[in-house]
Length: 297
Image: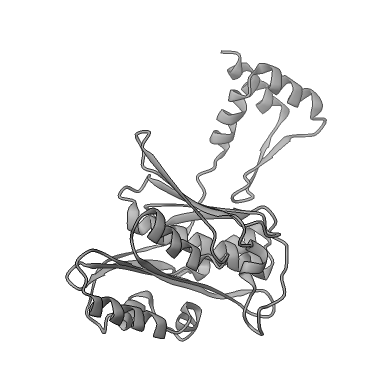
C-alpha cells in the first residue's frame, strides 16, 4: 500500500507557503504504465511531482486541473503531466525509452534527455471557461530549477523547488519526492537569507526519503520546527479516461469517419488506447454499429 501524500504548511506568520510530498508510488506507477527507462522515469516523475505541488499551491477545487508541459528539444520529446486538486496526477513522454549517460555515478542525466532549448508551460483550467497559461524558456532542463524560474518570472512568486527520483541499478524506483517553498511579500532580507541557507543545506529530496524523513519533517528542518501544517492528503496516479468517454469521442467523429473505421477494421474488435495511462478499451462490431447509430442522431 502506497504511503504517498502531500502536506501544505505556512511559516513566519503566513509570509511563507510551503509544500512537500513523498510520491514514490506515483512515480513507480508512471514507470510501469509507460515502461519507461530510468532517465525518462526521473524526468516524467519530477514533472508529475511538480504538477502536484503547483496544484496544491494554486487550485481550490477538486475538479480544477493544472497541466505542466515541457518541450526541451531533447530525445525524450514532449513531457505532459496533469494534476488536479484531489491529489491525482498522470503523465507521459513522447519517447519513454531513451537514455543519456549519467552526469556522474548515481546522478541521472535528466537534462540530457529533456534538453534545454525549448519551453515550459503551465496551464490552469479553473472551470467555468476560466483558464490561465504561462510559458517561459527552459533554463536547465532539470525540471525543478525550471519550475522555480517559471514561478518567479510568470507568477512573480520567488520560490525554491526541489524534486528528485532515485532509481536503483536494476531500474526500479526506490524513492521520489520534493518540496516547494514560496516567499510572499513582507519578508525581511535576513529572513529570506536564512530560508535560502536552510534550503541549500538540505540533503537531496530522495536522500531524505530513503532515510525515512517524512514530508512534514522536511519542512520542519527548513523552518527550525516553526512551521504550521495546514493539512495533508494522499496523492496517487489517476486518469479520468473511461469506456464511456471513448464512446463519446467516437460519436463526435461523425458518420463518415466512423463508417470508414468500421470498414477498415477487419478484426474481432476495435481497440482504443489512452495515451496517458495505456489502458486499452475494446469495442466489438456490435458496439461500433451502436455507436454509428448514435452518431446518426
